[in-house]
Length: 303
Image (cartoon, rainbow, N blue to C red; front, side, top):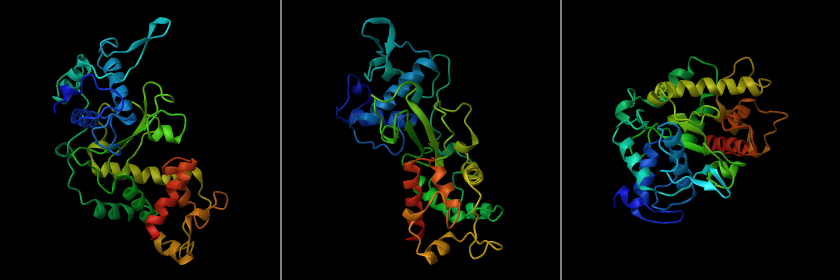
């Protein structure tokens, strides 16, 4: 079924044309990789449609009325986004997918593997070489990479992997789109590639394309710098002291296993056995969800 047959689709509809729409929105940077290509017009598909419409209006100068924005009740001067799949929306998506200009602007497309010069980088070997030149717990960061991307810079379709956080009022609405809790521009931020590096509160698709998207090595180096900054920003009170503070090995697995460490017991106040665990927490955000994230990363490391 073709993308054109998605015209007229609405929330909770199911068809293979919706799957085509989801794949198109993935390529255009609106449907994150953790959302399923499942032919189901669910809430995350709705969020992607609204985010795409927002950029069509603000970046590509497409008329909001042509995109079926509708006036608020009693206020003919305002226009509110709708999730309606219109012929204009589908035509615009097709134009962008073809690599053609729209409204005088070049399209933004998630880079394909062929556009990433170091796509075949031996990631593990490169990571270990980088770790040998900087003092940080490489085992913890590698465990983060496993959780974030499965240690892969690319999605199943051969394009750079990205994830989306929505503009919501709470963690649940950030992870899964909620029209009741969101507002334009709908996207809060995106995480990119191997490490899912996430520029803070950047909702726009990046122009020009940054190195952390089109280079696997740059993406990993960016994450290493970020991880070290998280440690420095949130606490340096307890650096690695295994097997001793004078000769830290950063062998997190051996340290934590020797203690029989259970991450659920980690205290933000005491930060034992080290403050690098707080940096893992902060990598996902200093929130209760970030705390759960840290616990999961540590369990993956020591199991």
